[in-house]
Image (tube, rainbow over the protein chains, first blue to last red):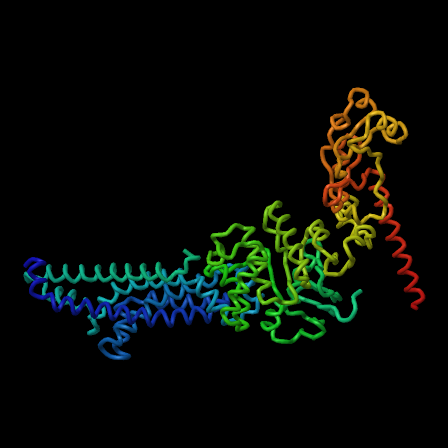
Length: 214
Length: 393
């Protein structure tokens, strides 16, 4: 069975899974961005807290995805919640790391000038430091996104959403005529989702970065 | 010193860092009078920047007190305090993600000014620092030159019209030509705005040029001498000050004194009008105690130097002798005069008033007499001080 034949017969399922995949990744990135930026803002001023938080997230990162999904299933059961939780945890590392880097790399003279003019700590953070760190934070979000589009396929193992279902389906049907076509379509769709999201984020970054920083 | 309360008063202000034997700033007492530029100058590591940053509490003092307009501000809210003081640093620290207008509007926005008032103020300030508002208001810092950015930095510090400006080596990062221009512009602006300015530099020449008063600081921010540039130059308090001033002290004084300032009378030179006939000119020169006459035109503008030999060959004075190449303005410094007389044929500099009319000449004797005068004045002032300390009236 050719890829074209397969698509002709199953395009509606593939499209549905692709949309699920997009939604799952978007949700996980949204959660990871909120938590990641929050965490970075809490720790970036102190060397010790920065080291501690990066080490902890690194340790989480070394846990294999399959193990993670399994643990989550025990904790919260099968389905979307487990899948998105795992994805958000994986997305955390690049976002936290880039946000901390971005905030710490703001020119100290700029911070000193802001403080010297009487900006409060929060005004400084929201009006100076975060805007200046913004391009670096966005590139962290892009790295996370591409990363978890791939990991999300494993989510099907815990009955999560997304294109993983196609890949697992193909594997289960190995030896049949449709297996190669199904795996090819699933893989291609995952790559397309990754490229699409990366392009969208690149565009958003470009449009929203202040002209003075470009 | 001044009548009433100084704008800023530092009272035994001290900064000690943990683990350091000697305090970085050791019990500084300093009165900064309203409307003056006070320079904190000293070798690196003397604590001048620490002292400055304690005034707006970027560095919290370990002990001592800070008064602003008579009010003890040592423990008031630091952010509120800082909005009452402009702050300019060497690296400027403009916000790169904001336009020039947004940068300048920083403090007015924090003070909740309405937007019309803010945009009027931004344009006014850009004008003041010599940047066309139409052209520059919507630019970003990276689209400006270093000198322009520094002007924006000064405008931003003045935005909410604070009574006090703190400036930490504000022109230190620019090339010498730009620095000189920025200094002159700033002095010009200060003539109008009359802010109280505390200005940190390590450059004694900048201190002499910019300061109404100079505090020369030693290690621990101890004040070696606090006085006007004139008095410091003519009467250094101790060896440290002398060393810090360096060897060119007399030349520095000359840079500070304008021809109009000196009491020594500007020497008269024998002059002739352009319509005098040659015989009369010859007579005049024979009676004069100089070897040349100075020829003036109908508006008394100096034209030519005429010697006895020139008179033998010419029937018309207007073409005799050699042209007066350069003249100096009454407001020029003695240093300018000295340079002029060194290149002039007769060893004198011709002084003219604003309209270009001849007012006199300055020669080396005038300059040395002026220097002598300054010294005498300093000695007399010292004696007077000793007297008043001995028997307070």
